Image (cartoon, rainbow, N blue to C red; front, side, top):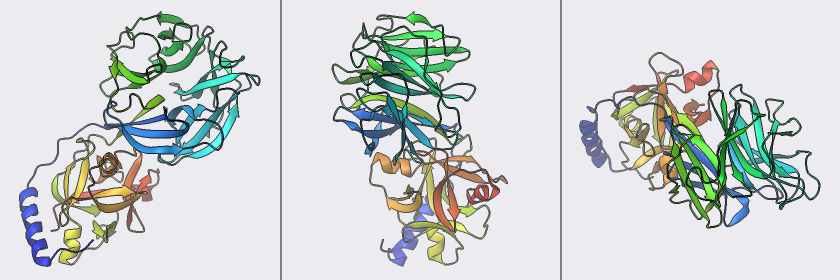
Length: 442
């Protein structure tokens, strides 16, 4: 990046500062929801695609071909965020067989194969399909899958395995869920003391609804046939809860290669199905994971500078397109350490940091390093350049900034280089990830 002429730089900086420095702080906002979705597509059963969204409706491709297993297929990938901070997927490895596959990622874009787990149920002609994560209210982690002992044309039933260690590497033997034969694609959520199971009736091809007070049943079907008015030929139901408490169910109309969603306030009655713009005709059998970034901490907007919370003689600044915390002395240093804080490019409840001396350039993370880059208009850039305010991890009136599109990762300095790192519980991280928002240095 070439420097602007000093005279023009001073004029531009003065004008921007005079306009923005007196802007009020943004209104405090609650946590900003962020949704991650993993899918296979009509074009590939061997590559997983990752999408994200700020509203659970409009999804943007984050990475195509994000994961290819070492062998077999990757149909029906289900995603969870575990207590160790990693994302895990579980998926269908083949049309026939008795295994399900597991992979892990620190950032949901780069995945590492972990293992195929043999569930010990099917013979060589059996089929094991559509594994789905379910975390119970007691913290236990389960995978619910559908299996037939006689192959693709057999009578499927839902089963579950339960993790017996915190690394999700050891599992119990399969246990039947207690659902009658010829049901598949079982997706379970729990509200209060009630388990809700949405699953496909393989005989009628309707998505039906059953409830129970135990994960092992007995299950009572409370919605059968065309109970919701969505019609037949549906599969792959998956649910996510929205910030206002409503539930959204997604499902695949596989015969027509269309995807839909419908909303409910109580899981008993749903609205009409709505075609999912941008994904319908492309994505297949996916799940959606909602995470929240930030809290109710309001961040002052306008031209501002960020002083390190634990290296108080240093400020966040850009230098040669990279971000550091450094002492500031010269006029150039002070300009490089001044940013226009405004509504987040990806979510207005969060914040983005635009360079004052290079308008149109924003702080964004790139391979977890904080850089200064020109806004290219892409959804990926907007997500990478959006950070949500939280009460400072180190206290003392400081503010911390959580990534919008990688919840759980925070802006922090390490060896005085600004990075995006997964939060740890130690005091050093808390200090490195805390900042004081000050009046502008330039």
